[in-house]
Image (cartoon, rainbow, N blue to C red; front, side, top):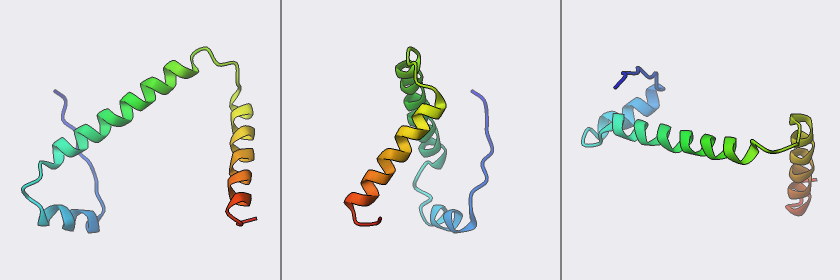
Length: 74
């Protein structure tokens, strides 16, 4: 297994120090696995997509605008 060094903000480090019973390296490993699995799924779903990045950004902007309108932000 490969080792990795992480930099964490001081306020996070203070919380971690209060909870020495937690295996923080395991927490980090699980979080990285979760993210990697989501990326793999996304890659699989998008492998056959014909949408361009521009198309996806335009759709995302329309969705954001509709959500903002629904919540009275626009």
